[in-house]
Amino acid sequence: MTPKGSTEPTPYLAPRPEMATGQPETGKPLNNQDVLGMVEAGLPPKVLVAKIDRSPGAYDTSPDDLRQPKTAGVHDSIILAMVRAG
Image (cartoon, rainbow, N blue to C red; front, side, top):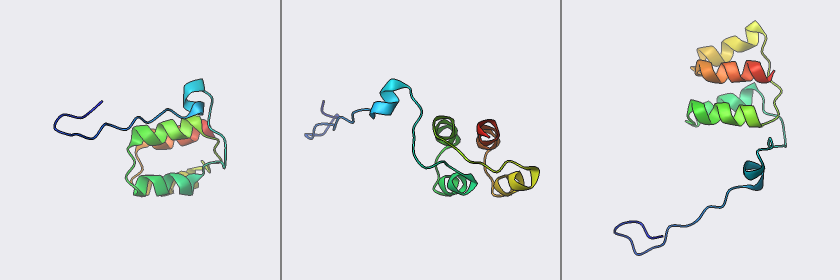
């Protein structure tokens, strides 16, 4: 497939195997600092919520620990996903 006005074909990006199976990702558990880093990098809330939902996590969700992401401007939907993931 070639984009309009281009002679270069559009590269095909194959889905990753774990995306095709619907299975959660594995690897190092995400934590509060990982989430703050992704927010600072500018990732949109929907992407972060999906990442939290599909990845192992070790979140500190005590009231004191939830103040930091809130004061850092983390969207409520992301904080809620962290709480749900425990």
